[in-house]
Length: 544
Image 1 (cartoon, rainbow, N blue to C red):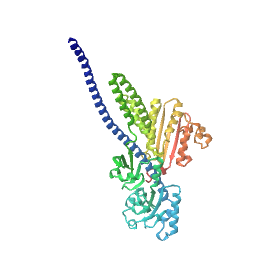
Image 2: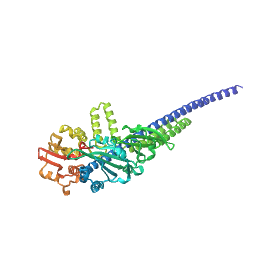
Image 3: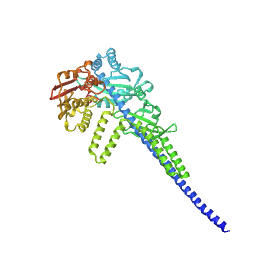
Image 4: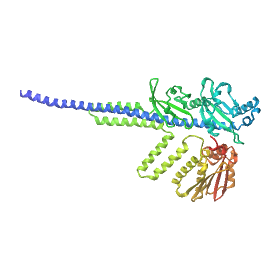
């Protein structure tokens, strides 16, 4: 009897820990399930937000790039309209008295315009209307004309107010419609006689929407739709035009959540600055952003290792294995992200972030250096255009010299004398930085003492004159002649691999169309001065 009681007590003592172990396991399992559930829900919302922000950022980058490309193309057509309005046969047509104008004169003017159009693509027609309403068109018979509207003042008011500047509109300002209702971007401008300054007529140049289709095809954008600011479809993916709203007509980028064919799409859009055009971009939420599959794998691994650790009792070992595996996957994910983000805007953001970290740590000079480097690369790399305002070119030089001063200290001093009127003058990109670099490495450094680099920009007789002067070792007449020589045998070997002095001078000559636009004066042991003359037909302020 005593033995039975003792055996029962032992069995009871054995079953108590077993029961407690089961309860603990259940509690742990419940906590694990709660943690996993919270983790999954949090991960879902974080992933959704990250994908949204990624898509927004990517869309903004695409829209800004495309807006810049469109504006550059329109600028080319504006320049073309300047050439047309001074064509001799057209000028004769506009100046002639009404009784002198006949079909022969009209045809001559038309042929003069077409001679200019032969060197470009995308112009569907050019319409010129004299003040007395006599009209010529290079492609008249494919348009339907609204003569009642044409005889009114309404459609031409904005063009007259432009005083000769370009006014960009849509579909010939309403006075003519292309057959098949094909959309057109219209460049309009009033024409003034160059001698009397009297207004002699109006020019309307219609640009076909196919140029934008070609642009999108070259850039491989199949998720872009280009519209007029009134919602008229012009080019690209037509399905997005059904979702056009007035909110997209501002220059600030707007994002909308839409469903197309049952699929959730982020639709981003904005107006092209200064033009009656709107760009829409649709981005699929399932593409790009946070690597969802990697996070799902991490979750599965976390759950598996955690359960194995609870069941086997080797929780610590399992946790270590999980962390090691997580680190490997995170490193792979980070590598993919880094590969995707090696772009100029990522460089800018990284420099800015490091700068703030330096500032927080009290390293003000490091912050200033990074800020200067960020400014240099932002001006150096952004907007991709070949031509920039002179003020931005000066900004690049100042940032470059600020970085060089960090390296060489007080050996370099820079001075600037820039006319306010010269700041908006358009110049080829990166013509000063190579000259300043040459001043440092082949002038001041070789002299072995502190030197001054002075950059001057003045408007003389409508042309921009730029002088870059350094107090370095100077150049011999033979060296100057070799640098200015157009003989390829004098071309230095380094000109093929860098923005050398020789190569920079060649770029300037090509841009200006004049071999005498660069001059060099020097006195050995004293100074070197390079003068560049940019002609006035590159200036923004002439006409737009």
